[in-house]
Amino acid sequence: MNKIKKYILNMLLFIFLIWLTFKILFANQDMNELLKIIDSTNKLFLLCSCLAMLIYCMLEAFNLMRTLKRLNTNTTYFKCLKYAFIGVFFSAITPAASGGQPMQVYYMHKDGLDIGHSSLALLINLTSFQITTILMALISLIFYHSYLSIGLRIFFVIGVGLNIIALALLLISIFSKRLSNGLVNFAIKIMTKLKLRKLDKKVEDLRSSLEKYQVSAKYIRNNVPYVLKTLGITILQMIIYYSIPYYTYRALGLSGDSYIKILCLQAMLYATVSGIPSPGAVGVTEGAFVTLFSSIIPNKLLNGAVLLNRGISFYLMAVISSIVVLISTFLVKKRENKEFKGIVK
Image 1 (cartoon, rainbow, N blue to C red):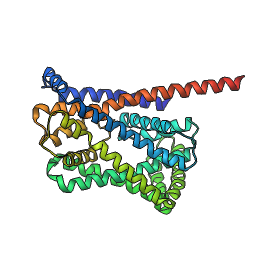
Image 2 (image 1 turned 45 degrees about the vertical axis):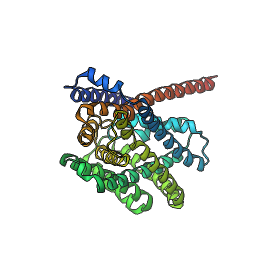
Image 3 (image 1 turned 180 degrees about the horizontal axis):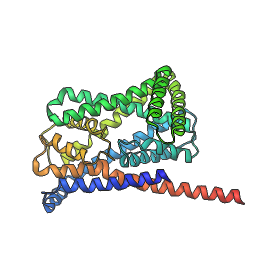
Image 4 (image 1 turned 30 degrees about the horizontal axis):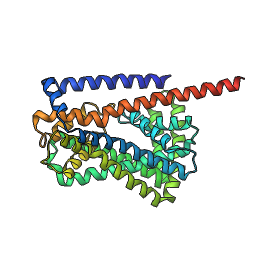
């Protein structure tokens, strides 16, 4: 029940942040003019943006399916696509995308998947994702660092720094059992000193998580070529995702800047806002987009570009994935009720 309340509160905060963001962003914007700009866009490029977002989710599902099938797990591609959408939704409404993977594990478990197998598949995906985010951001920085304002440079360092810390912790859990045990024991000491509520349960959960990671880590160490293939697919996945601003840029009738340049700007933008502890980094992402892309998009088209880019890559996906979550939850409850009635009979 507490988890449900937490997700409801996150959802309300998410909606409030969306309202506040658009109120500030479009405060001095003639809405009729904005609607004219959107109406005059090249619909073919908008379709490319939507397809890019769909392919992003499809590749996420493909990576999940590859690992689960390799572990002899009874699943299908469409179920994995469902898990990908579930991850999108809960990542969107929770701070720093922290709710995506736990809820994916939950729905996988409800479908009868082994928690160890689902955790391993998600760990491989997460590690590949962190490596890709950091590498693409740093490569982009080499060529386009001048486009980052002083304020964005600070956020970029924080964002990349947090991603590097997260990646380091993942790699420690994979390659060093002693260090990972040491980190967990250190965390337990801190929690003990802070006198946290339900300390015993938190310690138990932490040790249980460590055991699962260590089992997963052994598999990764023994299957490096396979993991590298997953990394390659993730790189393709993120290139497609980072292409969305280019398609919205072209949809607005603009063509002066290259595909690579816009892709690199988006890679830096994503790394900059990825560590923001608010649901979906709502507000910060829109503001950072305006700052970063103002040098290549005319001011009169900038708000339209924000609306189209975030509308397709985030808000539209949040709506679609929420429908997937609702349907999945309904089917889970229906199946559980049927099983309960069967037991009673």
